[in-house]
Length: 130
Image 1 (cartoon, rainbow, N blue to C red):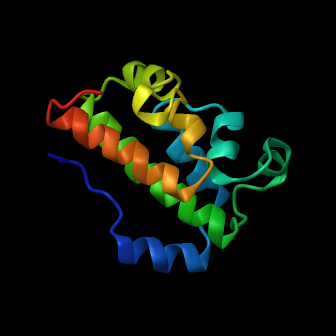
Image 2 (image 1 turned 30 degrees about the vertical axis):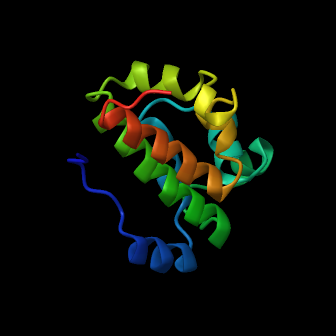
């Protein structure tokens, strides 16, 4: 169902080990309009630390992995919701029963949360709700 180019698992491993540039984080956040606070939380960083990073600096391996997972997740969400950026952002901020009444953004504080949120999107793709 996914018609957008996502980063492969092997690319995630390789690029995470190298560390991605802070500028990439801004690009990913701009896909749907995430705030710096939302982006930092999804990357497992404090907002103040994220602000201190220069655009040409590399972020840590863990934060890089989360960023690449976030990119894939946002691309999947945009595909699911037919490129409606505001709809995706609203969905990310809305509590879902499938996530024990957490918002998808709240679930992204763990790597497992990324998997769960992606599964919810997959269920929406196939018309399986709640």
